[in-house]
Image 1 (cartoon, helix red, strand yellow):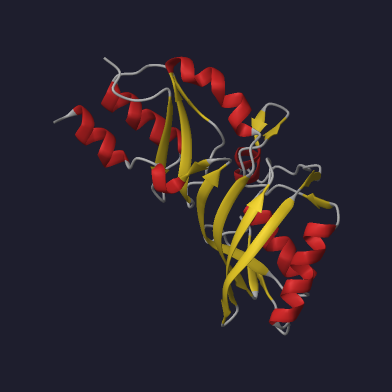
Image 2 (tube, rainbow, N blue to C red):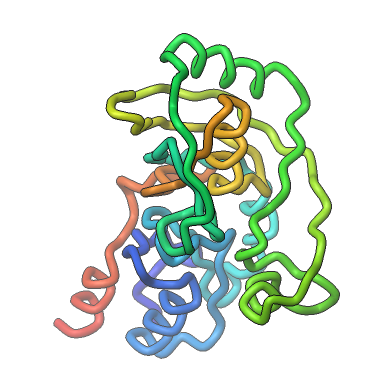
Length: 219
C-alpha cells in the first residue's frame, strides 16, 4: 500500500541530481511512476516536488508556480558554469557599495529582464542537453528569454559575499542571475550556494528528507 501522498515534498540533498532522488524514492517505495516539478542543480539543495502515480498529472500546473531561493553570491570572479563547479574564467575588482547593489536589484525588478540560461544546464538544444554539448566543446547559442525577479531580501552583504532571498518566475536560472548581477555592477559574480525554500504555497519546512522515506518503509 502506498504510504505517501500523490504530491510529495522532498528536501533534496546537495550533490544529488533530481533524478537521483527519483531513483532513490522508487527503490525505497517500489513505486514505478514518479516525476518532479522543476529540476534542481546537483550543487543546489532544498525543495523538490515529486508526483507519485496519478500525482504526476498535477505536476504541469506546479511547474509554472513562482519559486523562492536562498542564494549566496560571491563577487569578483566567474566560472564556466556560473557556480563553484566550473573552471574560473576571470577575475575583476569589486568597487560597488550596498546602495549600488540595491539600485541594480530594483532595476531588475522594475524593468524587463531577459536572461540567457547557462550553457551548462539541462535546457534542450536540438534534442540534446546543453551541458552535453558544452562538455564536448561544441559551439551553440541559447536564446535569451524574459523571466521575472518578483522580490528580494538582502540577508547580508560582507566581504564581497551577498546572501539574498529571491522570489522568481518559472524558468529563472539563479546561476545566470548571479553572473548578470556581476556584469551590471561592473565586476564578475558566481553562485556559491543555493537552496530552494518554496514553490508556490509549498514550503521546504514541510518536506521529507530521504531518510524519512526510508524509515517509513523500513520500520
